Amino acid sequence: MRGAYKQANGWLSNRQPAYLYDAGSHLVAVWAPALQPSDATDSRFRDLIANDHQFKIDDPALRNAQHFGQGFLIDRWREIEKDRRKSDRIARETAMNALRRRPLQIAGLALRTYMGYWGIASIQSYAREDLGGGELTDEQVKMLAEKFGFQTVKRLPAQPFSLLQQYFLAAGPYYFIVVVSPLVCAFGTWLSRDRAFAFLLFIHASILMVVVTALSPQACIRYLQPVSVLTLLSIAICVDWLARRARPAAMQPQLQPALLRLSAIISQHVILEVRLST
Picture: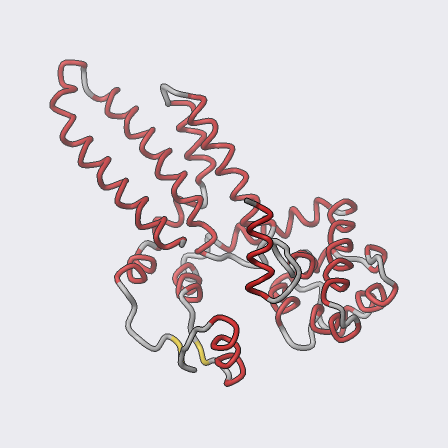
């Protein structure tokens, strides 16, 4: 299955079979403020990092620009090393050296990304950014048509938001619950009758939140969607515990319709999250 995925990805991309092609460039850009010239495994990349003042590599707010911006780290590096596979390999090795030598600094960058989710005024703007916007260049429109067979217009969005997109924007307050999902799952583990299942939710939610924050240059709402499903399951565990504790056994039959309705609401929410993530 994994081999078939890599072959299919390579065939669609007209490149060698692989899971990803810019993983090294992504990592070195996300962790750019933690880089030192000694981390580089290539003398040319070492010299580039040593001249970091030219593209503000120490600024955590510019990590996304370090990857995609013209005149920043990855753009400059690809001008030096034209072979994309080699440049990505060197970037990946450099990023891993930084992780081994300065893990606490990289953990600090992950914490900064996590705190970005707590900006009440900015959470809506993050959601709108995920839905796309702005104006494409003629070259970008042509590339989408040639490589993906996708015909689009230059100005985005070109049509009103769909029902799912409106739901995505309106769910802003709920995202604050998702970002504390490991804590919700921990409560679920404590309260659940099946603690092994709840503990598995806690482990998965914790891993996903670490991945979302440590490997992202900024807060991004769509990255929370897989975590949201685990959060809803943990909330269901807590609701079940509250229902059992609040009513005596004799009242349980009367609670069944209400619990069924609540279960249906949670199920619909899970279905919407899955649809948004695909």
